Length: 286
Image (cartoon, rainbow, N blue to C red; front, side):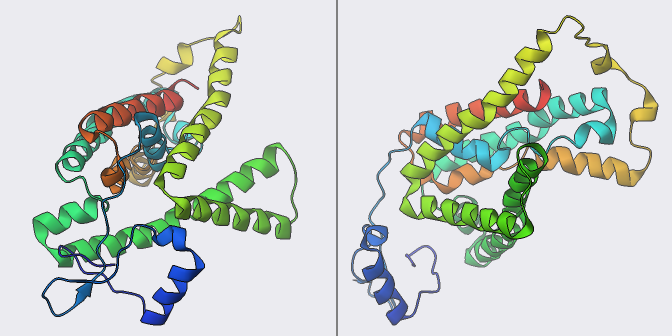
């Protein structure tokens, strides 16, 4: 699909014809080729409905940023309890909040699907926008492949033991399910993300309540500044920093759905600040 601002490589005519007939619902927003008096015809898209609410956008941003406290466990052994808590409190203020505010401002100023690709295209031109899109695609290929592995790893350690072929089938099923939800539209993605955000947060809420309710609960380890627990080499410091920054970034991904957010000037600040508060709480409190 191409428009006047950015041109994308189109599918061959036969593939386009097949896709239109296999799934008309996925192409319901497309209108016929539009002659823009140029050398090429463009596929012009009608503006999508602005339907995403604050909680739906918050769910999308939540899973783009953290997806709960899974994957943050290595921060504590990497730096000790006190340093880990300090890093997880400072990173949202010094690293996440600026990303959040930039995303909010640009999503409101340029409410179009494409997020940072659109922003870079407007500021630096199509070449850098294309390179950014390719780099992001490559990053997602490796990043998103981690999560089915993480989930099956948690299940095998805590719930059931799966043979290799069953674990692989479960991972493939998760990928296909996620793809199907995305193909059906951003409204379903928002509803699913909102429900899953609540689902994955409840175990940590229960864990916090159970810990605070124990009579022998002790907060002294939170303030233990024993330097022997800190990283002892530059590589260990780099590892700790990478863990913290990786688990507190991703707010810019919320700009990808800017064209489909209802009242973005109000929804974006509420959703992204809510995501920051929830993700930080899930990192620090458990």
